[in-house]
Image (cartoon, rainbow, N blue to C red; front, top):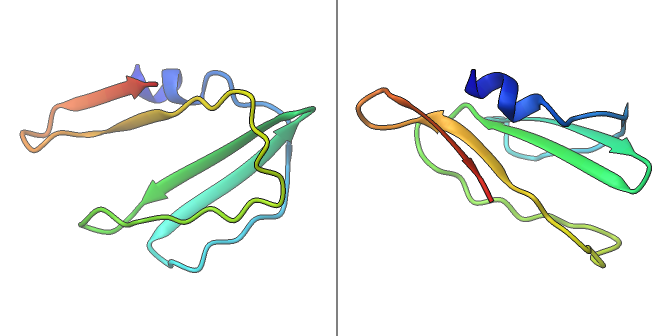
Length: 79
């Protein structure tokens, strides 16, 4: 269920993006003025990410996190 909530609003055309960390899977979509960046950490520890945007004049930023707790129960957080 959380997987579907995570991807529910993603629309648009895929755009070129890059990530230097081989443990990070990523996809980027653009739908009009909305940019969707999907990241998946394949590593066993948290990884810091630095975003380099040409335009940083964001009006709204929504963050969704889907993952697994230490006891293997799933979680879904939307901020």
